[in-house]
Length: 111
Length: 112
Image 1: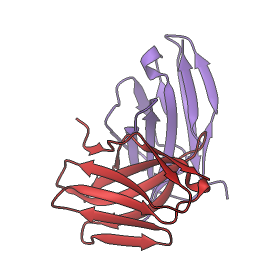
Image 2: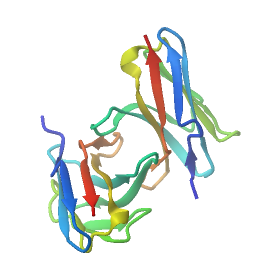
Image 3: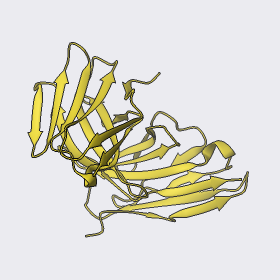
């Protein structure tokens, strides 16, 4: 049972580059989330989705985009990487009445 | 504006003793609260939750207490074990929304 998987585990980007962080869940959950965690800080919600084709902004959406074409996948896109986007990114999923299940995280360094 | 606050960044406790982790919130519309545990290089894992209609919820060694009037919740771990050493996050959500707001975390170290 894979749960929530994220790729890559670690990535170094140059300023201005773009990349997509992948997130897949195999639990058939409707709700999916992207968080970032900066050192010494809690998890900040970037975007979330309540089902395929439906996404909404969280607390810190600037500089990111998402799409949800299937129930399983919820990729996070960085278009023009900036040093402020250096962080650990967590994807999570849940179903109604259940708690969130988190992936292992993607560590991103923007230089 | 930090709606969920964990004012103690770290806590050290002797093995076998009680660990008490605290969390304060400002949004009176929050009605569901959770605690997550996080080990290094892993994603957070769910520990225990409480609805605002309760003031206490127990699960084995873990108990969460909610004081709505003070907008305060706490997690008690009794007895504490070295394997409990991790970062603990509290989170809150408002009914009808799908979002959790997380605190900044408290790093617990249980000394053997």
